Length: 477
Image (tube, rainbow, N blue to C red):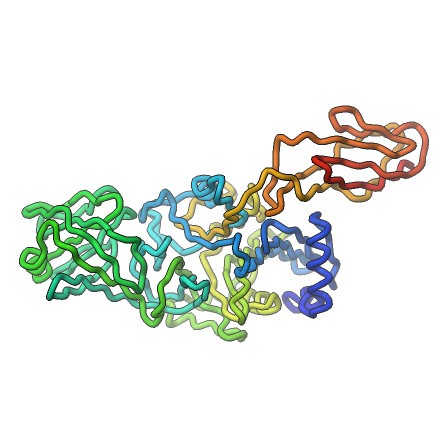
């Protein structure tokens, strides 16, 4: 069958509404049998749903997070391993280090390709700050006004003094002949440069942002040695040759200077961005340009585990995809063309492939939901894309008793799964739960374990918490 054929029902307005209603009122996993595949779905946050599409005939298993970008309680960020340019961590560990009570990670995937030391291959922007220069590979980005883009970017930077301007050649990179390099805290505690240049440090006067002017005050300058300490809310500017002469002549301690870092062709302010490659969907059509992004043909045609990101034409929905692979009895993976077809069937208008293989990981609400292909399990990676919920409440809104229908033998026992959520679908713990049985042939222990008697029949059992109730129909036979 064609990839994603089973998704066609949910693409019609009537089918889409039916799916949303089931998600809204059920909150449970449910299975929608579509052709030879099945889709398991659940709500994971405000305007955010998780799906697992499985087709045993191929076989393939695809995990999808769908995000309503118009929801004010949701935001998308990038995270760098250990908040350092050269570092690797598991996606789940990055999630733990990112979460706070006011920002809960409801979903995450691995992101860019990386070198052995953990440095990402391409560009990353985190909260308006550049970690590394872009390469000739496509980038997914989020602008300040929640507009989105996928494009290949270039870098240009400038340092402005009162009446002079000097080109900045790179971010957190090796300083070459006649270069001026900007180092921020992602580079480490210091610039790690040799003594053949000249360096100044400066503190930001306002939050830095790509494609906008940043103001700084110069706090120190050093001659005859490099490796200058990087201030916590600032930068080190390291110059060699002609750029060293510029710093010596036109910059003094106490001066206010300006920095402009631009990433053409994008002109608006960029909040978050992550590189990948190649771009595989352009204006709703499959378009895979391997040569321009330095990928081999085999990378595209072989079935691999894959990670990808895309968004719809209106830029109101972002979708994250992880395809499991290299597991013959479970999921073989996808080629890039098959992945693009699948994504288009999910409404993707612009789509980007990310790092795959053993790196492919999807985290949803406290657990890894896919099956990473490495024998050791989840792989440490360079960076991740995360979906945050910025609201939390301790009031019970939704209660989920699973399963919804149960068959039991006489004189048997069963432990139900009970989950409690606030209005933002954040799980709540340490809440008092009351189990209620109106079943004529079964009863609950105080612990919540259900026992059937020696008689057959059927009836409802309930669970209740803070006035919210859910039920299950139990058949004893």
